[in-house]
Length: 245
Image (cartoon, rainbow, N blue to C red; front, top):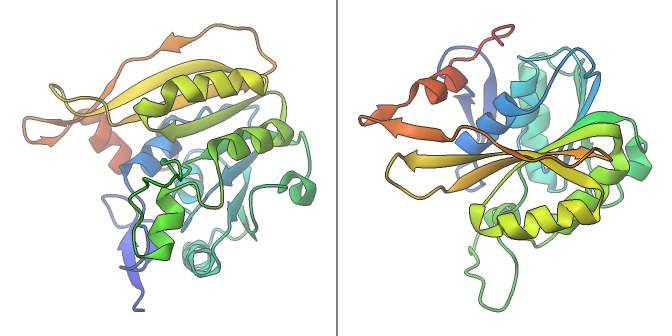
């Protein structure tokens, strides 16, 4: 299948290898990279379900921290590997061809300040509307990885008081909040994403902290389109350059 090189953002900067038959990165990935909590204490990050590595590459614009990235599908991993090398980021991003289940036994336990994840959104059951394309099915449905797998492994990977930032679907928010507590990952902030001001939210960014005190804040929502164009915050995300935040 033909491989295509696209711009990751809205200017001539980071490039990403993609294939038409695979699940390509979306605005959710860029928002995850933009809103994930990073400060001077953030030295080590791991991105689960990395795909062709859009989140990991976006994070290099915000930090010099070491970034590990985990992908289970070999062909998708190969695209990520090419993208990382094309952008000369192999010195900062280390890519793993692994199931995320048990990845803490490979990379180390309790050694990450931040875990990011854009996981499969949909549960797998007898009523699931599966795509005939295996790549897209695995990316969208919990075939190889469930929400609980992500949270279980995140707990093992994170240092005490480390953060998990994840993007998911609002219709699973109650389940997400319940499971976070089960794994001692206290939800700290949620931020809903709306396609338009008068629409329902179609994504939510959840931030949780390991072994922290309770206290959840609902942050200002993100509106993607205003007046038939991208909103200012979304434009800022697409045009983000190193050192801007």
